[in-house]
View 1: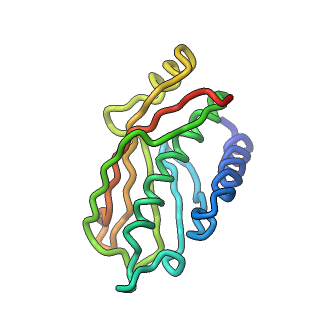
View 2: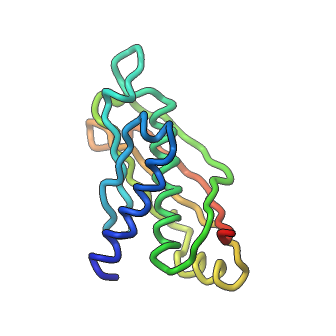
View 3: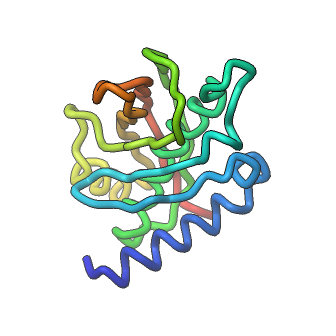
Length: 155
């Protein structure tokens, strides 16, 4: 995959995110993709709660969107126009976040992009498990998201 293809795919994905009013209000931005990890950021100032730390709903949104964006990106890079939905998820809040939000999403250890993409190409639908984390101040995760995403053909 060339840097130009990745860059244009990320730009197109950011354009989709920007059409969502809640995403715009939270100021969520794609921060890059490398080594199988998609990074998303959002400023604390737009996602703060009454305690001065990150609002739990914002953390949930950023982590969920990072998984959705990762699956959408991988499908786009493989040339598969698709609609992606979160099927189910679990979120653990482990520590307060007093800095900008930074979600890092990747396929779960038990998941295979090759299998996911081949299944989508063959059956027209597929699912994959994604893990996303919000780094904490001490180097450990401040929040952990696990979720299954499903993809269907656009149309």
